Image (cartoon, rainbow, N blue to C red; front, side, top):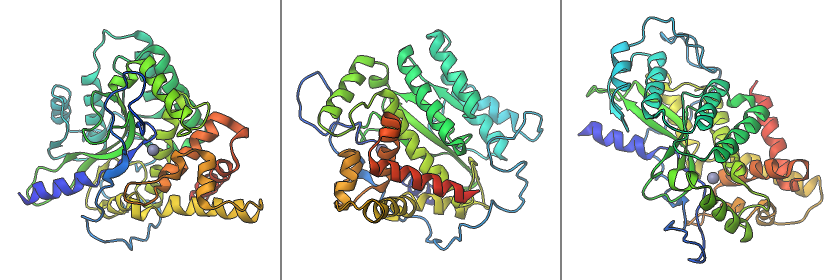
Length: 383
Ligand SMILES: [Zn+2]
């Protein structure tokens, strides 16, 4: 029971980054646009749960030595390592799990399990071009599983373009994201057409410890939108018309927005000393806890700092006298990151700035350009 409680707490901590954008904030209106409820990002996981080990000096590179083969940084685990639990891999290649409780011995096994699940999802009688895109993304950007289901080829290409742009501009992303998955329902409460999240996929089955745990960092795309290009385009059109998203937003820009969230998480992960690992055990549990905390709405230190620095320069260096709200609004309405509880999601501001930079290139609005510069500076400081 206790374990269940802990499991629930951990699950709640899943970072939920919903693209409100993607959600209809609007009136019933026109097309047979569905149900989508308003506010998407309400559910801001009720913080805490976890120990308050804040002080975690997000120090140095990763944990000491553990039996961890090669450390994080991408996925250097070659197939030759012999300590993979093949029996477990076999189990995961024959049965689909939403979450599971088993003992996973090491990172390599964890990654093999993620891949096995991806293979299991994949039925082969689908559009060949779409399957090619899946393989391309997995191998080029070191993802464990990309499953685009019955996406139309042009939409799959838009996903590919978004990844090419983001991974090209931010190589640090390589090996960080584990999955891109088209899913029938992203979640029941969150009616976003897409979202980025870090979720607990596997927990230890022991009663004493939830570790080792296996996490996946994924972008989920809602099937009813991403398998219906016309519907998706309509939604985008309406959101653009209402100023919610910037003019020129297309399917790729929507994916770029999610990859923007992934990028921020990736930077946080690096700062916490977690790197790209998917395997959480006693050695990096505190770092993982800190990683989760940093992404809660009231603990968004990194993005808040990015936005503040950019806003500072907007005023002092460029002589603009707009309020912080004006600054965000120049990017898009959604970039204001307004939340139901009156708070601000700086994460959304940054994701929208990244999307704006993608859509408009060098002609993007000043606030977006400044935020992009601050992101580059932050990444530069990591190395
Ligand atoms: Zn978002």
